[in-house]
Amino acid sequence: MGNRVAIIDYGMGNIHSVAKALEFAGGDAVQVSVSHDPEEILRAERVVLPGVGAIRDCMAEITRLGLDEVIREAAQSKPFLGVCVGMQALFEHSEENGGTPCLGILPGGVHAFATDMNDPASGTRLKIPHMGWNQVHQCIEHPLWRGIEQDTRFYFVHSYYVTPAGDRLTAATTCYPEPFASAVARDNIFAVQFHPEKSQHAGLTLYANFLRWDG
Figure 1 (cartoon, rainbow, N blue to C red):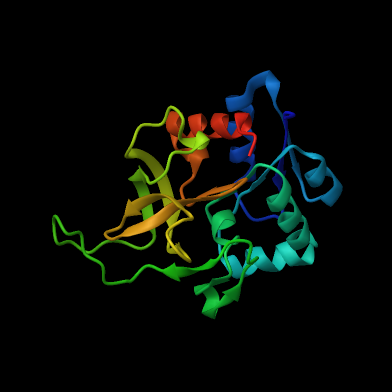
Figure 2 (figure 1 turned 45 degrees about the horizontal axis):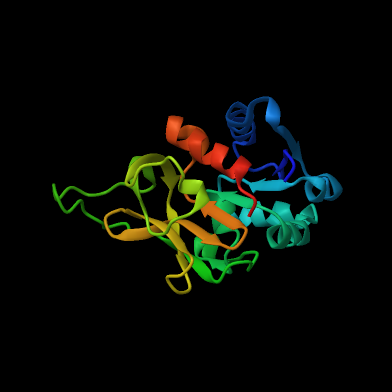
């Protein structure tokens, strides 16, 4: 596989941080581009879909720029990594913003955390969004987990979580306070709810694994 990585730029996401983390993880062996040009995205050997903010705004920009079909094509044919809202966008539908259709690449939906959740240990009310470091429990063996210990902590910021249709997609779970899917995998697609670019050594390890992964 080649070493060109395209980060899809639709104006919604901490794209600079993702690009810098990928460049650091890959060193001179990787060429990272940030682009909304369909040809450049599809020329790359690997594709990353990041995202932050409201899913309705993200989907509106993806559609306006004509990137929905580009994302579907890339997700069929090459190593593909979704991050945070970029993970949520891969599913069929989100409860956010009164209900938002998503890309439908993966089966399942996106749901809001309940507002009345309590920490089972202390009994205190859990805050929404789920923000900060939390353990990621790997459910499957996967090349992107290489060198990352079980229950390693990654950095999260989100108020919604994905519910895959069936358990076979779930690559990792995280508790808040009940387990939710914090990573999913199918064929050449891997997606995470946490932010690798904010997760220090573990996040850089995951990015480095993605740059070596042949899908």
